[in-house]
Image (cartoon, rainbow, N blue to C red):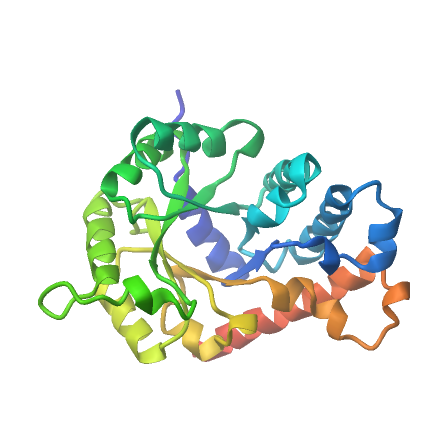
Amino acid sequence: MVTPVPAVDLLFEAVAQKGHVCVGLDTAAEYVPPAEREKARNDGEAVLSYNKALIDATLDIAACYKVQIAYYEEMGIAGLTAYSQTLKYIRGKKSLVISDIKRGDIADTAKRYAKAHFSGDFETDFVTLNPYMGMDSIMPWLSEAETGGKGAFILMRTSNPGMKDFEYLEINNGKRVYNAVGDKLSNLATKRTKCGYGLFGAVIGCTEREEAAKIRKEYPDLFFLIPGYGAQGGGAQDAAVLLKDGNGGVVNASRSVITAWQKGKEDEKTVNNALASEYARHAAEKMRDEIKEALK
C-alpha cells in the first residue's frame, strides 16, 4: 500500500507556488447574485453553482479553500448536498480543502467523526478541531490522519473578541490557556513531515500583531491557519508576522472575497456568477499581492 503524502506537505507546496490565500467558501444563499439564486431550484443548488464559479476563478491564486459547514447545514439536505459536492469539486480540481467543522468530542465519537470527514461523502483534506475536552478529543483524528494523509488545524488563539474569555486565562509561569494548547500540539509535531511541520497545525488569528509575532517564534513547528483578515479587521502586515520564511501558514478571507461583487457599481439584478466571481478573483489577487509585499 502506497503511503499518501501528508496534506500539510501538499499545502506547503501550494503556498510556495501560489501564495498564502485561503478562500473561504462560507457561502450563504444571500451572497449569491439574486438572478442566479432565483433561477436555481433551491438555495443549495444556487450556492453550489456560485461556489464552482468562485473556485474556477481563483484556482491559480488560492493555495486552498476553507468551507464552513454551518452555512450548508442551515439549508438542510440540499445544503449538505452542496457542501459535499463543493468538497468534491475542489479536490477534483487537484486543490486542497479545509472543512471548518470545529468538532471536539472524545473517544469513539471522535473516531466516527474522523471517519465521516476523512472519507466518504464529506471527505476533505483538513478539518478544524476544538481541543477543549482534552487530547482524547484530538488523538482519534490523528490516528485517522496518519493513515489517510490528512491534517487538522486546532483552535489555539482565535480572532474573535470572546477569545479572551477562556483562551487568555493565565495558568502558570505567565502562560495562558492558548499556550497550553500550543505546547500539546508541539509535542505532537515531533514527528515532522517533509516540509518540517507537524501533521496538525493551529488556528491563530491575525489580530494583536505583537503577540502574534511572539506566537510564531514560540511554535516554529506548527503550520498556521490564519483567520481575521479582511472583514474581521486584520491586514497583510498582521498576517505576515504569523508566517515563517515565506511559508508556514495560509491566510483565510471569506466575505471580503466572495461578496466583493456587492461593493461594485453594477445593478445587482444584472450580476451573474461569472461577473461576481471576477470580483472575487480581483479581491483574492489583491490580498495575495498585499501579503507578498508585507513579507519583503
